[in-house]
Image 1 (spheres, rainbow over the protein chains, first blue to last red):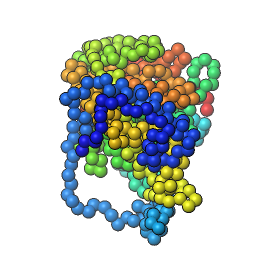
Image 2 (tube, rainbow over the protein chains, first blue to last red; image 1 turned 90 degrees about the vertical axis):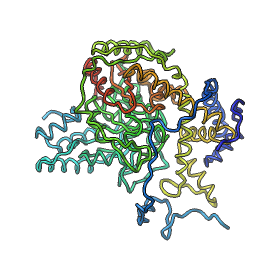
Image 3 (cartoon, one colour; image 1 turned 135 degrees about the horizontal axis):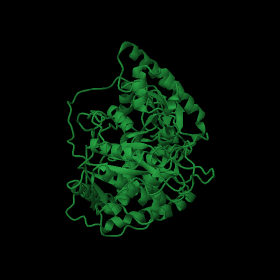
Image 4 (tube, chains in turn red, green; image 1 turned 120 degrees about the vertical axis):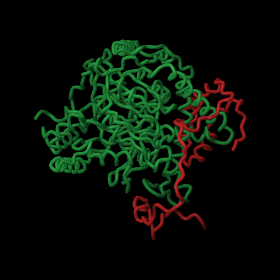
Length: 106
Length: 493
């Protein structure tokens, strides 16, 4: 699926508001001080990778596999399972045979 | 018996087979060396029980005539490989205490070949770094020091910094590394050892903590080319559990090792001569070219026109894949959880990831999230994937003319801890020569070439065609015979 974009437009510079938005998407809590510090760091990196825009890529397909390799199919059968305790073994909190999380419905 | 820690993999294997010493003696020698070198911080955990059990099995196998390819060889395993029943942290607090209930394919292959494990090796957090300074367990020290009489702490490189330090200091005859954009080759060069990243897909990624899945590839680091060939043979192989694993037989790389490279054509890419690289790097490169010529190879200047775009391409693709891969650390299924007082599920995710990830990992997740976000996907990620295709095409064209490429491994010798950690882009530049082969999935090895004016090792890189590890290893062997690199870090620990 093609995402809506204008590849020719120079991406906006990242401000602290954008940093907070990205952090929210990435599910990482950031303090105001961290957002302030991250904005110039991310701008430096994004400014540096900006040079890729100058490469003529007309007619070039995006790479999808480094080494040609057909994706394999296997029979649609159960090959695993019945290992609930092993699956839960490293869970920070497990209750009644389930992963436990803070309440998500009121 | 002389000190077993002076022995390499082939010598240990052969010595155990011939009864020159027992596997138990070897394991005990290395376990003791590991304990004495804790100041290097190369190991996150030590697993002497595992090494001794494998050694006893090797001694029993010798008695019953059932020796395996790596019987009696104790190895270090990078902490990126899931090891059943032993903590696997990927250098991150977020995986603190994680003890897998399964074994990674690569470590499992090595153990099935008779090897034992001395411990888990320190590394940059999630393999994101070039100096081992991003590890949640603190930086690894290189056993090397400058010859200026100072005691400045030097980096062993990264991300496989613990791996590099362990081999260079004689704490293990061989180790696993992983290479996403130079993480085997740059540390190998920094500490004067040999390390090879095989063709993408040779070694299974199953059970290897994921960083950037289209680039991640395991490989061995050891004292010489032969030892790398032996280890790689045991590590590699088709694995149905990894969708990008290559369904091809593993060649007998060791048996086919030959330093006779007469008639091979070796390309010298002109774009790898970049500004700001110390003159000494050029000097060892010229020396390396002379050695290859002496070995009977034909030297050809070649051009890889998109080389300068490799690093920025990498720093879009790798963070993009990382932001997706690292979404799994949510504090629910494994690892650390932080729940703020009265917080809901979202608050738990955000607090867990804020506390569990270090600054460089957060930076890369955020860059990756940004370049994949609606509105920027085409301009950044898709553009990078197209440039990546051009970089791979450069290599394809050049490999119609030549069999191998010879380049520097890194743009400098090892630097001091703290010297580059405040400037992400300066740190990223460490991998300027390593990243192109990663983007194209090609096999590449770093071999020690000499020392700089401060007595620190410098390495050169040989890059080969996809699946042609044999030519890479053979040319590296011819190189090794001529370089005669024998400098070792003097033990100060």
